[in-house]
Image: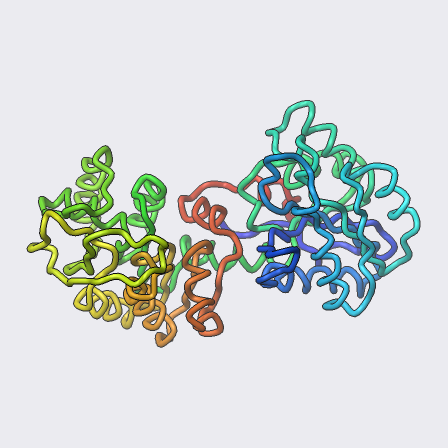
Length: 411
């Protein structure tokens, strides 16, 4: 699934109104942005268009917006941060209608190189509807504001939303370009090459809580990688499928047969499927999640029935790290334990450290793994940290992403 899509380098934007779908879904606390990584990730594409003399119109969603539009999910703090980082005013259209008269007036007043940010796209309920009449109308209104469209929101690329994929139909109908930005390019090149054309040995590491979340990822990666390492809560369903006592550990009893199938598939394909050999256990789950907790380590063959496994043990840490040492490509998605608790983060830290110390191409698949790597201070040691958890998972499953499909193919 390589990238044969038109990019921002493939058309002249000078004097043209370019709508850029970004991923400004940043964490906010009391109206203050607590992590600016997604804003920083969008800057190269925005700066390129500004320097080319485009009129740059930015749009994004923020939050879930379950209770209707409110200032809690306004993009006003993003406009402020962008203005500081670009060294120029980003005009913010605060109108909850997103594409109404205020937006039209702001765009009409633009000069070449100006930047306007529209209000949260999810303030229009039509944004999230799959292409139907409501979504079509909002997409058409967005397209009316611009001449060309650039999708640079990998974190939303797996959703067929009005501002992600439906809008391209209306931009294309009036002869406009539909391209991808630099962030999208980078994501697809790293993830695409890792899955379709990896430098071998290729090691994939999957963690997280549930097998059900990663059914297709496990199956697809077994066909692509040389070694598949499984940790986190999902490992206990595999261990139970092997006949081990897992105590009070997280288990998906409906997926035990699936785990058996995957182990058989690995054997048939000649792939290594590596599971933990020891487990860090607790008597009761901590409440709050980061509260102090007493631990006991057991080999997986000796786990007591009254304990809960919440992290990989030291033998597993060493074994996983050893598997990474010989790799040339490593993809990691999902923590090894309850990493939000300092006592139960050792497995996740060990894997992050192993990846930081290898010369392999290391790709972190967004979500909790990305948060863990950044929190632990290993972010700058990784080749690529994906900005989209759900999108990167669907990419690793081998699915086509609507936001990528919707861009123009290169001729």
